[in-house]
Image (cartoon, rainbow, N blue to C red; front, top):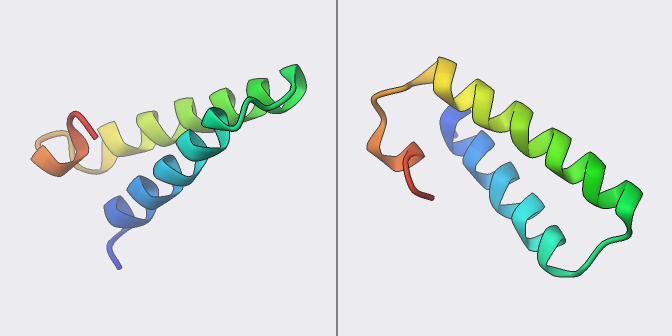
Length: 54
């Protein structure tokens, strides 16, 4: 599995956790991790169409 695919899978898992209405501390941690994933994706392959809009 490529690094981009791993990050996309992690992002999907975190998005699902957000849908389960976590507490404020957990929500903050999830949002922090999502921001890190988005930053990593932009550095790994900014032209990858699979990374856009998912």
